[in-house]
Image 1 (tube, rainbow, N blue to C red):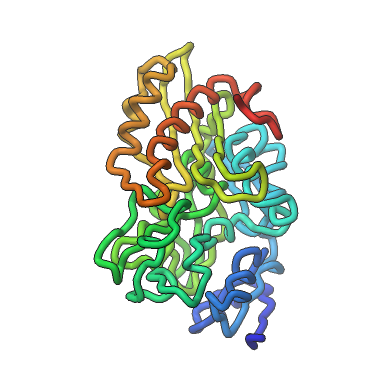
Image 2: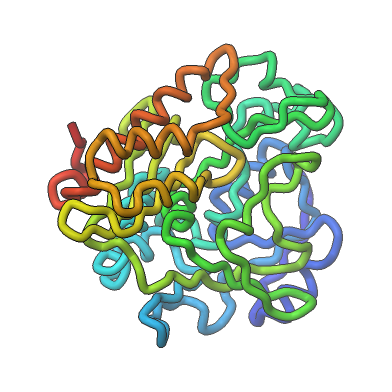
Length: 343
């Protein structure tokens, strides 16, 4: 049993004042943090409970036609909210593809952005891991690496290497939708484009994102363009439920007839953060929505991928997933029904 203090924060300034202290951690749903503490991966001396902050439990329309999601409401509430189902079905489907119903009922939107990798070696405190203990080495490089990254990873030197992947489903859709993350902290408020929130490992694999000590995610802004007519979320995994993605793809298309006016494609299960290559999306503009064009875009998006002993298959699988998901987005009424298993 590890001892820790508990503070129930009734206003955000109190929470921030406690959160800037060393070895403190915020807790909302706790679906990842509590596991990390149980496994002794994270040792927090003080937990600050954010569940009682006032007026932070809503989903509202913005003046520009977009929608603001509270960071403190649950994934389940978000996925089933009428505004999200109507305007951002891609986000709803991605959330419902993640975890289990019980976890979605507890996990919060803000916490989803902050979850840590599920790399086996990160969770095993008896093995070297640069993410857990910087400079100790990366056990996944020479170990069992079937689930690991093929893009954006750090391979060398060994004391900085990291080939872990980011596990979220929700965040892959948020990346494709180009959400904005709203943050409050000791230095006031700020906003980050979603693509700038998470980090690649680089020289600091222990850092997952650009949130500063004491800062709290307060909300997420979704732009007016939600790709509600043509969208698809494809998750390839070892079993149909309660499994992390081997590869996932979020695709949103704006079509004029069979011509692509704009496209968004984000991948999960392949990198340390949600993976987008805008050059691949730009390639699709003005092209006919056919598999050959999605295949050409896939080559651009997966360019530079590097596989390892157990996960080299993910390179070709990622390309095929992009093609398949692009075609599925053309007819979401058939391919994106809840519980549907697309052919």
